[in-house]
Length: 201
Length: 332
Image: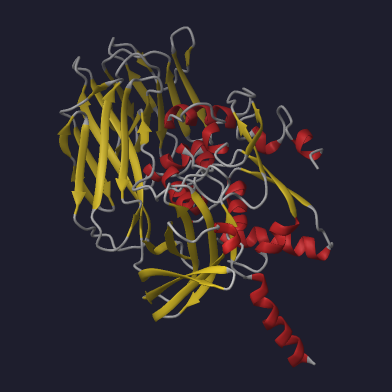
């Protein structure tokens, strides 16, 4: 809710100040869940519906729509020394990480969010992009960390080190998959998916 | 002039928060809320030590092993294998030896490419938590807790299942950590371990994380350890919903119910309409700002969305918006 209000505030102020009425929203990771909150709760905040109305579609990159097994691990390790490089990747057991556990997302999908099977459809089309690669660049410590995380938490099927393909594709229509891992599909520095996003309008 | 502007703003506010409704996509089946989240499947375990010492690492074999050591400060570790070979703290290992050490900032990860079904040992020179995974192992711990949405006073069921591929693993010890409590699950046979708690000592509302630790042996006598997790949401008991009634008002079907609100605040009233064949038909939702006490909740669904008004099923939910949580749910 807090993140939803922050994001909605930024989008709303920007679109109103610049008379923007045709928007394509690009999200990464938890951002995809935050946008789903806004689009699933149009009666919660008066800024939400105008944003929905002016949005053409959403491109959702590696969103943990059904949660992330890595976030489950963060919960299991709570109480340990949550420091270090891999824990940084997991997310330090913050509120956003807790909200992304598979159980939490099951709860949100059941009651609050639209777009998953058996729930009302999202009011605008979602195109999803799932990451399916781990070892993109051996010199990046984050790649080692993500590959280790993937092995430690036992993500089912393909994954990008943080989010499994099944989870990223649980909402919307598959646009494409990318071999860029969760680190690189955010930074757009490997198999640049940003080139696809920049021309998708 | 200032007064007029203010009135206009107030008058405009409800328009942005009007109830919304829609039709489900064709072919969508109505789904009852699941009793619990999908089971978490684990091939890893986690152990902690409070001071320098050794940690047993049982390996099931037929898998690699990842050993991730987390500590408050950089630690030195020595791995001892069942053959007596050692990886000393200064040794980075090699691919040829099938054993490598990675270090990044304060973290250390050891990777064994293939383990034997035997006991490994990790010597750590300071307090640490060690997370050990066997990514390709057939020995799995699946865990869940129910109900996913727990109203005050509802019992909680903790469920664990141990398998070695298709073979159930009985005779293990499975404990669950729920808040400060540690409880042992009963072996129900066929690899299933379960415990129902009639109530929880934890009254705090919100997500409640449960950790499971299992130790046992396979039918070949190979020792194993697994750590799993599950979550439930402790609800606040924010409202009690009465029976649903429906009637046609103009061009809409009005869904009504009496509600005893225990906690004031902003809520979302949801109505899901399904037909008798289990097809999800239509939905409606709207924000309601409620005060403590009895009140009638109403939500209109345009008849154009539902067609005929006979033989319909209704699922009404009241969801917290100030605080996330299911205040109540009734069906008809």
